[in-house]
Image (cartoon, rainbow, N blue to C red; front, side, top):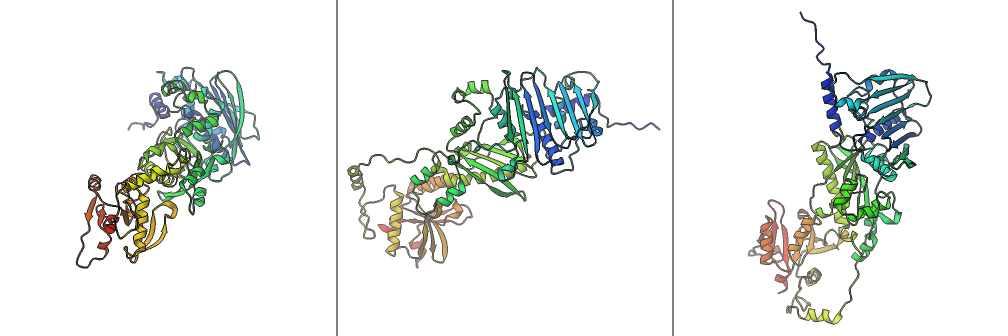
Length: 567
């Protein structure tokens, strides 16, 4: 009988292939720092000191990075196993961020020199791996070697990782400014704790020591807070959507609303249910796409002169600017920003999507190696939440947030009345109006209430008009509560549907001046039905309603044509 064979021991070629796959799964320069930050934050969470402290040193001229923390450290006896590819001691600890065991391998095999010093309750040691990066492209079967030297024990627990990167690869983060580097660290790595967005205290701080390519040394200490777009703004430059909604009661004019929101960032935070769990979010809406550039300049992330360059030149010389503010959907889990940016599928008002920013925190978020994507079903759920929050902004502030407040042009009184006198005469005993409405929705509203007062619209009992600016009239008809919309022409209602400002299944009655052949054509192109209401021997509602607008099996919208009642 032959001896058993250890067939699960990988060869050097197999290890090399697996490590290449790990490296290829990452696509951002800052992924190296993100992995070091993640491990440091996890070590701090395990030890739970009174305050976590980290120190990041970036030496651009010498292509060196060092990351130090006051976490739990690593047991020296476990160090060889934990530095091996795909090894991890965090798999069963759901409070920690890292679990896959590939981050350290990615750092080691991206480095010309990797050095780690650990100070643990069971002792201290220093380990070094030289040439791991070069080994990836070699043909040798000899594996990289790990050298471990004991160090003097210390009560100052923690870990220090130092890496030197090969000089044949360009790393964009070496070319960043200190402010740009801070932006990346606090919005793309675990240094920027997203728990602080929703009232959590910053449990750690980081000292950044950055020597730029010109040899100038910069030092800055930052609290472990996520870098929100509002951080460098004065309080008068942004407003909560809830505060605006509370203020927007009573009879506020559009001009007042525009002045209230003029040139302001509007934000909203809260929670939504998704996938059977609570998803936290923080979102904001800016007046225009260029507002992101303004925010980036005000935070000293880029100079205005660079932003004014031709986009092609700017892309060529300054890359894709991951360190600038922009719209989109971002994610985090257990306090760590993933750095993954996702687009939000347009569902109406797509032109405003670039104005919208949202970060969603999902405690059960899963993502692939390298933090490039989120599984499809989970991504779909988060996108749906983001879309719903986006619609809250669009429905509440879209028409008021952009541009200068309305300034009335000089009014020519004589010309205005001459134009009115040219309108068709409305010779009807059923109304005091002397001219037919010509595109004015306000006249349709006035005629409706006049007819109501004259008893020509039996069954209607108005409750309130224009409540919260969602729909035009909340009323009772017969024994039912109804939502009423006023339009001069039916086509204006479809524009509201396109913008999702109004929803088909929430409207019961639409009051228009008349239904034209053009309306019938528009209805056909949208796959709807517009049917004339037939009167019987004992007319009831048919005396008021003239058409039904229906969509498949949904409850039809009943249409009142004032022209039929007035003339």
